[in-house]
Length: 384
Image 1: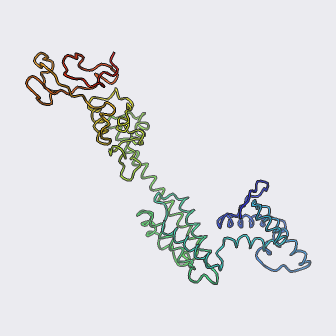
Image 2: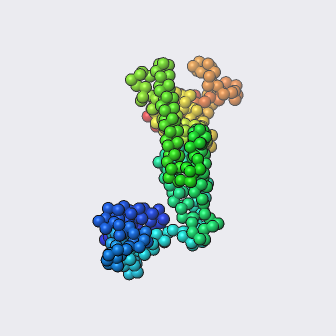
């Protein structure tokens, strides 16, 4: 049941069990502060109202209870339905609203609720041990367990003791520290405590907060030792250690994959895929600070790009040029042999020549074209 309820001042939209439970709690709070709280509470609980003028008092309490409920409802369709079918019958109206989502004796609803409970139990609590998030899950689990009751719930009902033990196991499964702490305090979970969900939940909350505090203290201690080490090794000053450590850790953040490796170049490096220098080169783009890199760094990145995207060196002019040099004896500057790949013929050597003298320079290392048998057309790009 849904509606565009922009003209109503309430908040309840009738969307599910959790919201209906919140509504019931809000009604209890309003009734407790009402001037006629005794009679309205009796009506809500289904208790008899006796004494002088009891008939008139009962009718008045029912009307007031219905008014309290309707004041919280924002869903227009629900408000119309309640007004037509349960006007001035506060308890009947509330029972209808709560019954829409409560499993009650409906076997299909009981089955669905039972599945939801099992799913929460199977999924467990977050490994982060976030106490507020864990408490939220355990509270929802307790609310669901309370629905598995009724004359037809025999095959689904979960006893209080069983439910509390399920919660204990879930907290233990967060990690070894939690399991150890519960083992140390297991005597506190006696039969009386196991039979009391709120008390047990409170104890589990205390255990989770205790372990979380220890974990934070351990992290803080490790962080302090790490910063002291950075200063002692002369990597930064005491005044700049906070910034230095933060930048260092940011660079060491793993790639957002399960194995921490870049999807493109298969190398661990910081930043996202859009920051991969090899990928930029494979797309014909110049990586940031390319001109500040050493020749070895540039060659490694080009090779990495070619390995990840075969053919990109040729496609984007990243490949080194292979040329034939004639009359090598006339050019003593090549006598070191550092650039030699291998002999092709007498007085002819295959020579690897970089495409540019430097990334910011438009000239080639060798500008005398008479030295070459042939020159790739791309080598003339950007020529002055």
